View 1 (cartoon, rainbow, N blue to C red):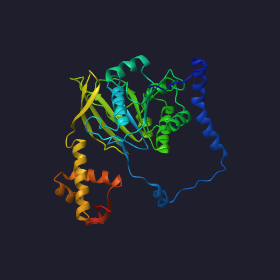
View 2: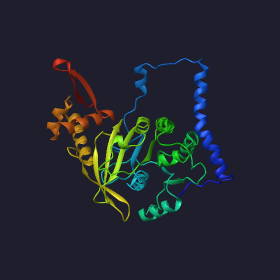
View 3: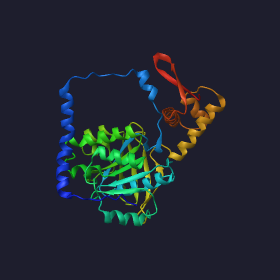
View 4: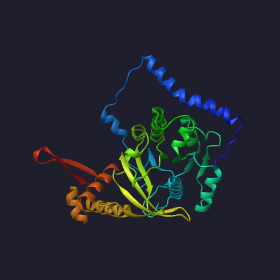
Length: 356
C-alpha cells in the first residue's frame, strides 16, 4: 500500500525552489524573532512542569519510546532498511519483534528516501509484506524528495500515524545540498525530535556512515556526531559480523530512554530478511528475561507492601544487583513503582522502592 499523490508541477524546478526555501526559511524566521526583542521569557516552576510528566511508554520495548526520535546508524549494507521494515511490520500488527521485544500496535508509515521504488518492491516481495497495512512514501512522490516539517506534521495528523520511519535522513538532507558535516544537518533532526514530542509519536531515522574497517560502530564513528547525536532522543548502531553476513549486532549508544551499552546479537536470514534476537552482551540478559524479572519485582512489592532496595529485591527474585538496579529504574520511569530517598552513611543517598 502506497501513499499516492498527483504531481501537477515540474519536479526539478519545484525541487530547486524547495531547496532554496528549505535552507533559508527557518533561519530567516529565527532572525526575525531575535530582532524583535519585545517579548519576555516565561520560565515555568518545576512543580507545574511535573504536573504534565508522563511515564515512559514503549512503542518497541527497550528500543523506541513514544514521543521520541531514534537514530539508527550504520554502514551501507548493514541491514538498516530491512531492519526498519521488519520493525514496522511488528508495530503495525502489534506483535513481538525479533521474538523478544514487545510492541504497541500502531499505525505506521515508511518514508523511503534512499532506495528506488523498484528496489524497495523487491525487498517487500522477498519479505512478503504486501498484505501489511503500513504505507510507503518514496522520494519521487510529491513531497518525498525533501523534508518539510509542516507538511510532515499535517500528513501524520491527517492519517493518524503513530510511528514514522525515515530511511535515510542522510540521503534526504544531503540530496538537498546539505552536507552531513555542515551545522545545518542537525537542525532538521532537532525539529524531528520536537515533532515526535509534540505529536506523542515515535520517529525512527536511519543514517549512513562511511564504510570503514571496524569491528563495531560506536558514537565517535557516526559522521557529524556532534550534531546528530545531540539532536535526537536515543541512538542505536547496527553492524554485520565480519565473518558471517547473517549475524548482526545492535548497540544502544545512549541518551534518554535506551540503556547505554546494551549490545544484542541478531540472527538474520538473507532469504526473507527476518531477524531473531539470540544473545545479549556480556553481563546482560535477554529482554524477555528482563521482562519476567520485572514482573517478579512488581509481584514482590505488591504482595508484601514493603519498601525494598534494589539489593534486597535482587535477593528476592534471584538475580544480580545490577540487573535489579536497572529493572527498578525502568519500572520507576514507566510509572509502575515509586521510591523513597534514604540518606545513608557519609551522606550518600539510596532508594527504597515500593508499589503505591
